[in-house]
Image (tube, rainbow, N blue to C red; front, side, top):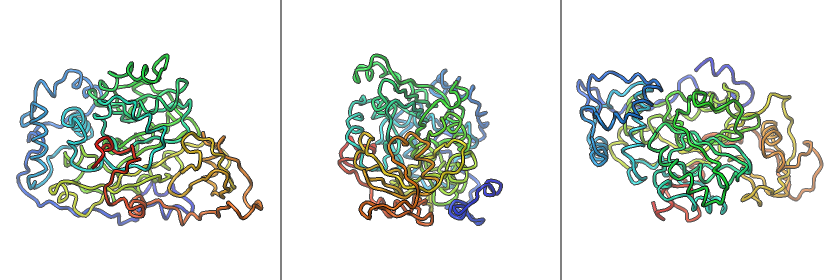
Amino acid sequence: MGDLEMKIRGPMRKILTPSLDRPRAASTTRASPKRPVLLGRSPGRPHEAGSRRSARSRSRAGSDDQVPEPGVASSRDDQKAEIHRAVQVRAEGPAPARGPGRRAALARKYYGQVLRTSADLQTSACVAAARPTPRHVREALQNVHEEVTLRYYGCGLVIPEHLENCWILDLGSGSGRDCYVLSQLVGEKGHVTGIDMTEGQVEVAKKYLDYHMEKYGFQASNVNFIHGYIEKLAETGIQDESYDIVISNCVINLVPDKRQVLQEAHRVLKHGGELYFSDVYASLELPEEIKMHKVLWGECLGGALYWRDLAILAQKIGFCAPRLVTADLITIQNKELERVTGDCRFVSATFRLFKLPAAEPAKKCQVVYNGGITGHEKELILDANFTFKEGETVEVDEETAAILKNSRFAQDFFFRPAGEKLPVSGYYSERQSKDFITDPFKLAERSGSMKSRCAPDVAGSCCAKKKSC
């Protein structure tokens, strides 16, 4: 990681760069000559090659269903029972599932065969509460077909602001819930593409294309779904600089090569575009016991990135520094999984990464929000550090000024030189960089998110339809 750290300069380096003695979770399992086989891993079975071609051909052929591995349950009920047995026993260590191909196969099986509704989940990683959702987004969510909603396993509702006529790519679109919500918000002149590696989920999404087109009154569908890998967008034919926004909802953690995912998102974004995504992050660098635990991997915890590493990866690729939007602590609802994770904590957090054009550095300035964004007429919450109220003047730092001037938000603000004399009323002083909130765990604790909850006006949690957690 040292070569990445050297690329970071300026006053934010101390905040963004991990210390040399990185915090690591203590190992919680004792050594044993024998390890139990969890979730159908057969001792001595050769590791999966992991190529995209072989994975897709296996999925098409249905080989997982037709020729079960030794120890792999052949029915959904048996698979669910096996998961529950796996997390209830006092395991001496995780099954030796290794390599990106094996992990991708595990994720396909977990989300394509084992999970049928959010009730099958073992943690709150995919049912984390979201911030209050605007009325027009809640109404759009109610128009999504029930099966699409029930088969969706994201952490919150990942819907950014100002979407009219935008082209949006959803990484790991699953059953298509967010895509169908977004398709209403971008309108007929906009377009939404969803990509997912689980063929069964893509089939569910495609099944309701005509249903939603008719429901929205569109002349033609403005949504399409692709079966593929989010770290290999070029192989699906997605072109450079073809999307205004890329979103992802609790999926990047399932990909071992997170840098490649961010690199591909950066490639397909237009200048001024953004990656707006919710994902799971760890408070420590994860030990192998957690990374290789099959249930924790499927529940989005085993692949969680140490939160400080996001800034290093993002800025190495060319994004601006990550802007933290929301954060909620994750609860583990199983004693055995609590024992495995030990002192490591997890958080579901939403970040936005902007891709700005190469230009002269922006200067500090004063901005006034004009209230023109649908659903955010009174105020626009850019992130945890900046809330812009209609008609009020805020002095912003150089990077925030560059984001507002070069993104789709430019038409929603008036810009004035810094230091211009203004009336006392409605003036906010500049926030110093040292006051910026960058730690999602601190934000979650500050907002009281350690208690799971389902607010009546929150549409973002998977338990919203059930009215209770």
